[in-house]
Amino acid sequence: MMGVLEGVVMELADCALPLLAGVVPTADPAVGFKDVSAAFLVGAMPRKQGMERKDLLSANVKIFKVQGEALNNVAKKDVKVLVVGNPANTNALICSHYAPSIPKENFTAMTRLDQNRAQAQLAARLSVGIDRVRNVIIWGNHSSTQYPDAKNATVDGKSVVDAIANNDYLNGEFVETVQKRGAAVINARKMSSAMSAAKAASDHMRDWFAGTKDGEFVSMGVVSDGSYGTPKDIVFSFPVQIKDGKWTIKQGLAVDDFARGKLDATAAELLEEKQEAMAVCAAE
Image (cartoon, rainbow, N blue to C red; front, side, top):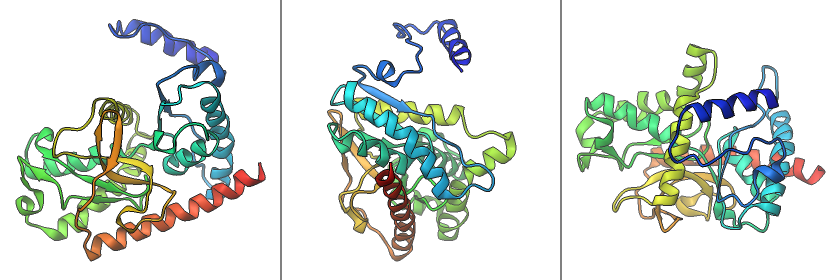
């Protein structure tokens, strides 16, 4: 695999990126995470045909235990960690578990890809540019139970709900399209999302460092404090606002009965994942 890594290093050099000062190719987490300010954890065990979720979680506990311990030992204590490898929410929880000297708030899971997918769907429906749609929310797990929510979204500062004027679409086709988009990409290209995932990871980390604009929020999987009736201490995707490198959950948004059911369903899945993962951790 080091040969493959060397090929990536060559490609990075060939990109002639003006802000790339250097690359340290390594298979040693203690070297790779030394004094880092940002960590993108992309690698995880993919779910294979016939594999039970507990088997997947067991394999990922081993991976994220190694990475969590390395971050704990050699990374900066204010390192910003983004977990991309699935199941991203629970992998972020596992990684944090093995890095107790780093604040839990510094471990996040990527749901920005889902947000970008939702934003793109709404922009296409409205026949507007993507940057005119704001404040789409992804609640919950980065899985098919996630809840893409357009009820607080705006287009040119006006309500998307009013602009589309079709609740059946917003509660049906829109939600299902975003929930199943990852599977649709795999079905079409026989591989999981790559370019769109990389773009989403850069969006996530850019906003975490640079902050969100006034009146806007973005979706991040973060450790729940119980907001919006969610269980505490699971990694749950919320709308967040970011200032000075710190995220806060956007409060005061309306959650109707339809949304409540969706939030409860995705939270139940995350609780089950957490219980299974912590059982594996306890056995390690």
